[in-house]
Amino acid sequence: GAVVSQHPSWVICKSGTSVKIECRSLDFQATTMFWYRQFPKQSLMLMATSNEGSKATYEQGVEKDKFLINHASLTLSTLTVTSAHPEDSSFYICSVLPDRLGRMNTEAFFGQGTRLTVV
Amino acid sequence: GDSVTQMEGPVTLSEEAFLTINCTYTATGYPSLFWYVQYPGEGLQLLLKATKADDKGSNKGFEATYRKETTSFHLEKGSVQVSDSAVYFCALSDLDSNYQLIWGAGTKLIIKP
Image (cartoon, rainbow over all chains, first blue to last red; front, side, top):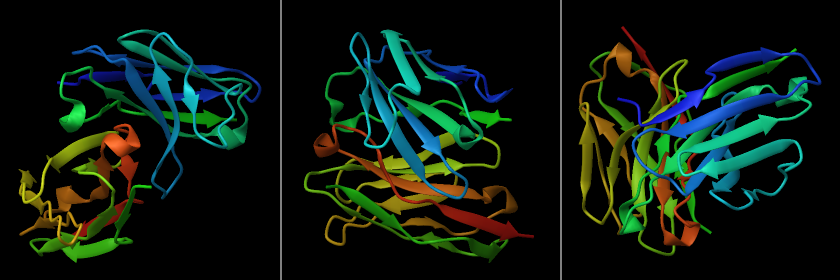
């Protein structure tokens, strides 16, 4: 069964509104979660690293005021796209890095993704 | 920094053909290597992985061997099916990348009946 639940799976919103995407780790605690964005026919682009209890670390070129990340608990991270515009339309995917001993072999688990369409 | 290079797609094959999707990597440490698959309209799923040199990951008829001497992790399948049509991503993770996944660009695979 799924170990990461991402919600909603798709959303259509009007330009200027905000959209919140949730990423829940179902089977384990995760201090670290990642948010990716995928453009059509391209690979995943890491947007930010979400750390429980502290500020997210954003990749270069990603507007932190536009893409708000909150990681309030060890099982939930949220990404809010504020004042969305059509160019924000994309596929957003979260991944969860389980807290385990011996992190050399840790693998990440992915949510199902959220298709955001801004009209 | 770490990087992953995989062959460009799309790759188009007939059903029951042999598949190879090349993946090479650059890393300063000893990464774990992964293949992820994205079926149409779905999220990413881990297909297989290998955590040390000479390890072979396998799943659903797919295999990939961690070759440190050639820094490669090529994906192979002996007989593909239409249902294998998807986008395949090679990725690595290691201490130097703070365990973030470093991704290849993805290879779209199209299998024709």
